[in-house]
Amino acid sequence: MNTLLLPLILILYFCLLLIIAYYTSKNASSHSFFTGDKKSPWYLVAFGMIGTSLSGVTFVSVPGAVSTGAWHYYQLVLGFFAGYFVVAYVLLPLYYKYQLTSIYRYLELRLGLRAYQWGAAYFILSRTLGATVRLYLVINVLQLFVFEPIGLQFWQSTLLIIFMILAYTLKGGVKTIVWTDTLQTFFMLLALVVCIFTLQQKLAINWSTLWNNLQKEHLTEIWSWNPSKSDYFWKHFIGGAFITIAMTGLDQEMMQKNISVKTLKGAQKNMVVFSFTLLVVNALFLLLGSILSYFALKNGIEFAPDDLFPKVIQAFLPPGIFIIFIIGLISALFPSVDGAITALTASFCIDILGFERKNLPEVERMRLKKIVHFSFALLFTLLVFLFKWYDDKSIVNLIFLIAGYTYGPLLGLFAFGILTKRKAPTQFIPFIVIAAPLCCYYLSIHSDLIWKGYQFGNEMLLLNGSLTFVLLFISSFTLQSQLTDETPSV
Image (cartoon, rainbow, N blue to C red; front, side, top):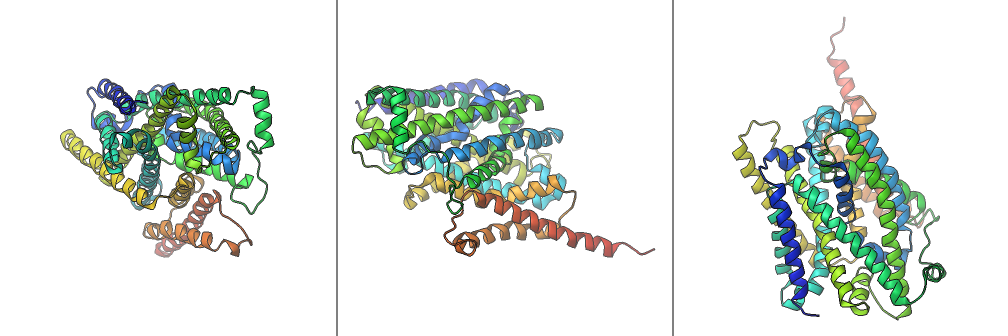
């Protein structure tokens, strides 16, 4: 294959994104950058969110993980499905009721300024780490197949990708992201379906025989019933539900697209359609992983999980299929990063710099927005270099590990605000949201104290959020006692 063909495809793809950005960012203001002017069609948001939710991690890591974990990941997906209904019918009505631009403003309205700032800070920390892990994973693959053959080093490839993302997100914001994510989701799903059918044809067996062979090799097992294991069903299911509530419902990146829909009913329709679609799409990714693992087994291929998909596609399938794979991979990369950098810019400007609290002129808002946008791009670049130095292949596990510690306090803060009518002393909030993750980390490294051979899985997020909730609840009695002491006797 011509070494210049894949870079040319990347350039053409980028030009298409720029064209979309040009038409969607006309007359853009700082407000439209953050909200999309509340005009996003619900069906475009639902379809585009598939690409954002799946990202390069699902595209590369989930199929590779089937070789060691079969379909146990689908237990987590079923939990995701349940969690989306909580987001649709508990959280979205809240956000629309208060007409929020930043969802963390709810914490200020309910618990005060410190809760608001710490909630936003945890989102910024978590989304920055999570997005850069995803970015690192996909750049690694692109480096191997696209950039290395033309002589670019990893740091040069990273700078090029970051520049591309900056170029089409800088002005349009959410309005641009809704349309570009829709396009990129289409290409990613196209690559998924084409690769599945091509591998089946390469194996030269019909679907019924192939499925029976996959079952014989234990590559389609869904359920895990050992409570000590990290992939135990109830850990995955309950953990998956709360991962969705936290990483979607309490995540500014995911919610900024939903609340850009004009009406609450439209946003809820988007979420429900999206949840059913993800069940099918994730099943297809796991099917792909089973076929890839079976193919590798039959052909004596040795592989690391994250290398399985690209390795088989490049070495054993026609060049045209590999080109489609690269397009799908690029399409998996951009939605997971462009939305993150836009959401982080929005959150920092609104929650930390206080755009909604300060009466800044539009020119000053646009200037500050650009500075923040460039700053996050620089931070993303530095963190990708750090992950390259760290070089951990278990990327999908790393993402959920990060989420368990950083989204836990967010989950606890929102749960306390929604489920109780109590107030917590604002001076205690920083200590509580720091202490809860530290206690969870201590438990994770001493898990034998709970049960010999016990392994923490996705229940870490729930434990972290519950501990935050309990500490807030206990501290609320201190505040009540103070109010009682200050009340003059009659």
